[in-house]
Length: 334
Length: 290
Image (cartoon, rainbow over all chains, first blue to last red; front, top):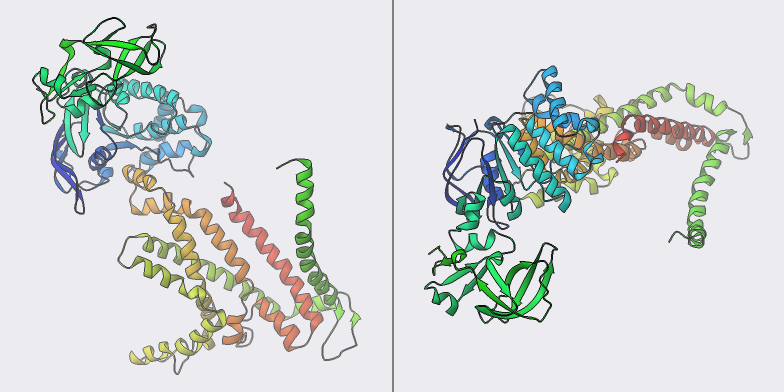
């Protein structure tokens, strides 16, 4: 019902090649997140799937049917935009009804679906308001409601939470995940926030400059990143990447160790350095360690929230050898 | 900023401008009112006397008045219709990317910079003249009888000339409004299954409502007082076929030297303009609310 296959899809804007040949399969009912830094082509990829941009070459199949040249409305997909793209002159009810009205659905069925969507999204009291009278989170829910009522074969989300404040973002993240569990519909979600990707996805697609760097479950990407880019992108705070002599000891060009896999001690350890900024989160403290002689970049290390360290203290660090990531000269996992 | 002292100072400093503007408005208005109750003809100086409502009775019962009233409404309504519909369509066209866009946009605004007298004369002599005009030559080329626009369809011709002048204004305002439409809304509508026509009527037209309202209100103010185009083309004729209220008042006071009658006509015109304004605001004023 919502299996989407991209077959050697490319996209160029004039001379600029945004997406080199790309293959990807999204299975029915999966929650797939496209993640990558700004300008990596993730939104373009989503718009290609939606049909808002034409592919330069290659084929897009939805449920086995060639959809490459199908207009957006015929693809049976619903999209939630970053700006929500609500129609400002229509009430919430009319906004949600719009796709059904365009499809010529009978009025009874329309009302029924509107009521159902409004109930599940907590919008019942706001149906007669205009979008301008709603808060950011409510607008977001209206946009989702407008997508739900069409009963699409897949939902496309284009950075839907980036305009919300931090607390609301966490809430909406949960709501969207709940929605996915309730509907079991395929969802494709674009974000540059790797926390959103990690928390929501069944499958993460990491993109860089239009290329797929790695596809896998959140924990796959966390435990075995295929290259330096994925290693540095997934996980918060970022993985420490160490080059030069220390890496050569392990027979590779670069070694990576996550902040949570470094053991810190004030007495003894393999590496030593000076504590710079300490970020106290309560449960954990993140230390930025300088002057460790392993490279220019400070090392980040996670320690217990109770550890009594201050700016300028000496500290010793020992990496957990079993959690060490090794990368060769090309940046690939060795 | 909002302390008592600063507010008082603001009032004090703004008062000269307000008083000046008030005087500028109130003096001519009261003189017009005063003259409208006088028998005041420039051909009989020194014979002014109070006549009560006589001037009004004469002006309002003049058959030319009814004709002029209809002509005014037809002129305003016709030009508004042509410029808003035409302006919307032109704006849609110019919103598409095409080669030479910048030049075309400048060319489109050009008619607005031509003085009304000049443009009316150009249309009258170079296009609509039944002997030398371009349209006459065209008609003759196709073996047709040249059409004497200003004699056969005087009001229609004037509506056409005035529309030509105001179309660029409407186009430009509507074009900028169209450009401020969020592209994601159009894309969302496209995803929702709306075709080009549905997108136009459900998304673009409501978005343009406010700009269209502004165009209508501004144009109405200027169109109620169209004068130069009539003076240089038809002189209000044949008969009173292209006389509007402004032109009728001009004839009354300056061609017949009847200051009293002209003033009464002026007061009537003010009242009518206010009636039009009230109707307009009732009909489309809500579009201006945020």
